[in-house]
Length: 234
Image (tube, rainbow, N blue to C red; front, side, top):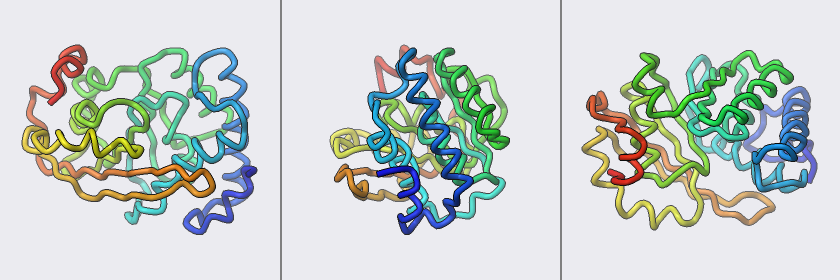
């Protein structure tokens, strides 16, 4: 599978040649930088296209909202997944890539510059610190391959506006994590909005997207210090 094959996928109808060129350049930059720092476990183009780029874009199929002029915060963005592919696909939407590791954040800044992504801002900071420091609240949050859902929710929800949506990218192990999240809903003033189970085309990999809605202002005690979040998840 090459990058141009993505335009044959029915729900990616707005993926034109200019966007495909940017995704190709993003992949090349990532695979080259991956030789120096750990960005992805995938080191061949076909796997990268399917399991990183297409996987990130699976959200497009189930995101029915008009996201023009809306803001996304991508938590623990790493190599820019899912933030960079989504930012390429939605050029009129604002994406903030939150990445605590300086080397990875610097790589993301390079990608943003070389792809001329005017709708992307890179933030080199930990999520729980940024949530307390920044008054900005986002319409959407995303996270892919970052942490257990209980930990993710405490990091993500304080960053959202009331009425905002957090989308967690999870694999087939999600059901094991999900058994303990209902006690979190009342503490963080959230509810589960939608669970989408799908298969990655070609790769036969199960992808689960869980949408959470923020219903009210997050209590001021959240997020806690990360050491406490990790030691005693909600």
